[in-house]
Image (cartoon, rainbow, N blue to C red):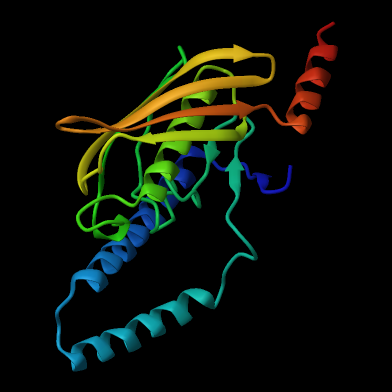
Length: 217
């Protein structure tokens, strides 16, 4: 499938790149937060803009065409570094560090700051959906039932405050190529958003699985 790139890298090279690109994304993430909340004077703002433009031009001098996609080793180790939720190289990502259980569960403790605001002081509803979509999908994959999001249904029980949050998800049931997953986001006072997602194994993946099974028959 387009966007999935086999790029065999030894562990030490992956570690080197993590140490190089992770801090860069974190610095840009901090810049975004600072640009939202700064009260610096006009001269400082204009000077900062010129510096940011110069840095952007420097990074644009040599770059990929299109998106990062998912790079992976032959052993299945994946690097979804451009992902908007967990991407190591993506300053838009919080990013979430997601833990998984083979029983079909996934969870994460994370923090959403000023860049993710919708109503004053609260997380944007679309951001909550973004996070839950990722968490539910991770739970499906952890349980050996990966798929693409077919539907995602959310119930916003109350506003989700910016700050420290907890998200979790677990497989509810499986019906053929469809995996149903339940999840939620909570703050210290309890659940703020609930979600149900249906994840569907795409046709190209079904064909790949079928071919693999044929080899063993």
